[in-house]
Amino acid sequence: MDLDQLGKRDNRLASLLAQAQQWHRLDRAIKKLLPPNLHGYTQVACIDAEGCLIILAANNMALSRLRMIAPGLLTQMQHVDQRIESVRIKAAPKPDKPAKQNMLTLSENALDAFDDSAERVAHHPDLAAALRKLVNKRR
Picture (cartoon, one colour):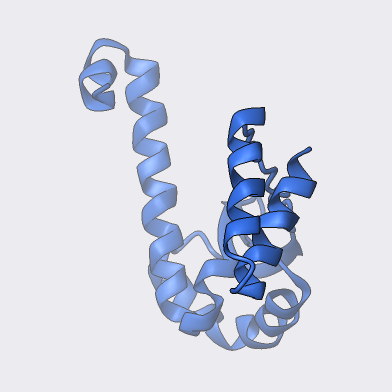
């Protein structure tokens, strides 16, 4: 799907796409001013009506570090966007990734074959134990 083509057909969508690109450029420009180790943990949220640049921090480490260095970077941030008069850092933790679930299913025939193989490789105790563990876990 080509968003630029859709934007040409709808002025509201074109305006929204232009605004998204503007925020993306601002986010990249502000991140260039920050230490590289913070780039993955920060995101520019907005510039509010009072000219306050809101930056979101994904964890407490990034939050405290940004709060320490942001005042010293204010002048440089103002060169990026003249609307910026102050900076505020807010916490916005990223949600935890859901735990992976093992969806492996083995047929009874496969489990029987693994069980049989465990008996045949008894002279390799680690391999035999691993096969038995697999069979016991899946039955």
